[in-house]
Image (cartoon, rainbow, N blue to C red; front, side, top):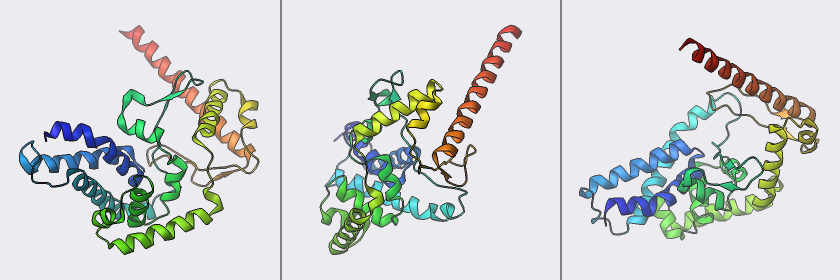
Amino acid sequence: MELDSVYQTYRPLLLSIAYRMLGSVTQAEDLVQDAFVTVQQLDNNKVGPVRNLKAYLCKAVTNRCLDYLKSSHKKREVYVGQWLPEPLVQDYAGVTGSTSAAGGDPLQTIVLEDTISYAFLVLLDRLTPVERAVFILREAFDYDYRDIADFVNKTELGCRKIYSRLKRKIQDDPATELISSEQSEQLVLRFLHAAATSDMDGLFALLSEDIVLYSDGGGKVSAAVKPVISNQRVLAFIQGLLSRAAAQELCASSRSTDSSVLY
């Protein structure tokens, strides 16, 4: 089987696994690419020695994700503020249109069509790397326990116990109740429309009194270190972000105009 065909066939699946494991689009793409480089080195652009290529690639990506999560654990311990998974930015046509996968990227398409939401990724981040791998491979991809055990280097019985324990824990946790993807999309569209039109009354109406906002700048931009609590404070926080964005856009426009005059 030619490597190009392998790449096109399995890349969406591997990206989907890696994104759920890591909560980072960039890292998911890097680790999947690294797995394909390893495959390429096996047989000079032709895959032959591997008996079950799909299982081999899934195991390779899963192990790379486990290694990355273990190495990043200490970084999380000293991370300032709330750590949140990296969201996939969806293309909302005109703010009020329907969602579509940006540029037809397979990772975007899979995640948008899947039942596991961004909120669920936040929940999964509470788990250990191995627990996360077992739960994702079973819940999202329906792998049998024998394959999962091979992927994570555990016994089949051990994987069954891990999944069963996590399933009960999540079902018993009232905080894990999630709204449907359709409701979520409509809420996001209403929020974006209110923010884009500076409709503060409409924006405020979307916020419950006990709302809590968590902010994460990824270590690249400033963010609220502590959670923002109550609808009044959350609205003020959002207003501040919108004002800052408008000021930056005005400044960029001014620099562009000045450049045109100079040149």
